[in-house]
Picture 1 (tube, rainbow, N blue to C red):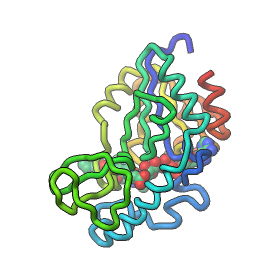
Picture 2: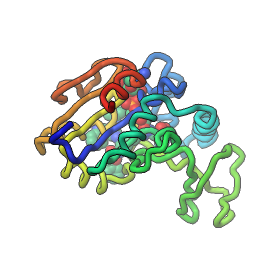
Picture 3: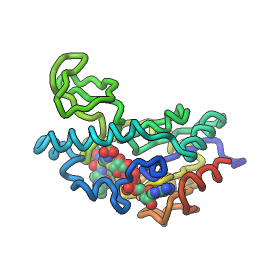
Picture 4: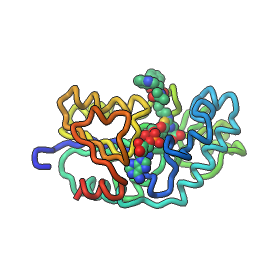
Length: 228
Ligand code: BV8
């Protein structure tokens, strides 16, 4: 990667699949067990808060039993060793990039390790269940929701992400189906700015045609191969 200085890496559920965390759209994926509009929208939360809180309690508990895999480890090594700009933009709400040691990470769809109190609008570290409506540690109100970005809500960090894309020499997409925007549009933004684009995924995604190069296989094999 001689002429590459600044890298933006987008990751999706596929980078955590081999850690045992369900992806969304593969067979048996999360959404097949629940209708998206029932569990990942503000309307769904207003309609049936218990369903949504149980859905996220189940995932938060499951994520805390999982470990980073060789793909997370390779990306953390790259982050530690790369002296140019590097940003890992993850759609995932798990913390496996950080637990592998990555530091330059943006969770554009939020994180399972924080609660959002809709009474005092604070984000607070959180690891327990929410189904019993625990009190906000800051204001005492029983108004906590998962600090994740639902459909129809503005993703986090968009200014930082767009700035990084503008400076990038290379955009790498890892383990994402290209089904969800604006993340799925980043490769087109990169192409429009003449950034080199690479896809590392188990198989062709909905956005494969936009990539200069696609490599297919399990992330724990093809991501270390690319990094090393
Ligand atoms: C917004 C919540 C605007 C947290 C999630 C055009 C432009 C902008 C928006 C839209 C648009 N068109 C439609 C929209 C609206 C919508 C959208 O994109 N809808 C889709 C369904 C068409 N987007 C939004 O609503 C977004 N917000 O646009 O706001 C706005 C503007 C102003 C003011 C207010 C608002 C918000 C989207 C975020 C939704 N929240 N999650 C959570 O519960 O986790 S999305 C959810 O899908 C997850 O975050 C997940 O990460 C994400 C994407 O899925 P993937 O990560 O790709 O996972 P998937 O299962 O799909 O694919 C896995 C891939 O891995 C597969 O390709 C598979 O082959 C591969 N794989 C599997 N195993 C392996 C592997 N690869 C390698 N190795 C393996 N072992």
